[in-house]
Length: 151
Image 1 (tube, one colour):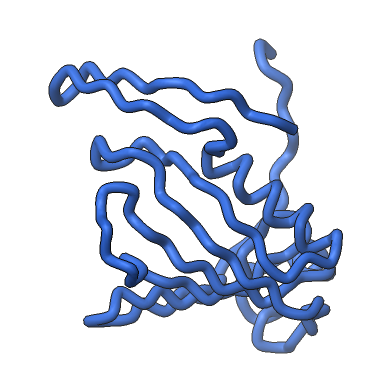
Image 2 (cartoon, one colour; image 1 turned 60 degrees about the vertical axis):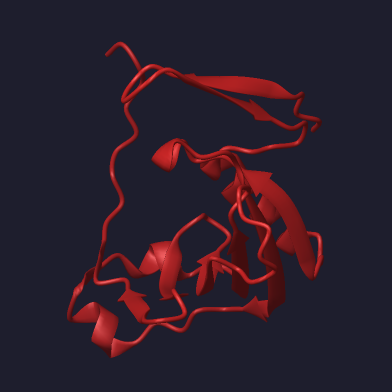
């Protein structure tokens, strides 16, 4: 799928316009395309992503995709509020390096290591901001009923 170039116009906090290059993705599309790349056996996935935050342009995100992994259900999860069926899908260990569009520094702004599942769930993630690291682990997960718009 080819995404055309476009622009973003902010009203709040102040009038600002930003140009987005062709191929720039929004975060949900990035996740879908990253999973598609992993399913196709690709090891590297590179794209610009615009998340709308901080009034900045798109971020350049480089992904390294590891070998497929099948999450193993553990008794530890059963003791918590996690629907094991949602974790019983293939996943990949993925490392993302995120670069600011406005910086010319060759170092990533931050890096993420995660276990990304084929259904889009991130089982665990470490975010390295160079000065400190945040570790996130899935502690609750339940399936919700799908509702149709307008009902």
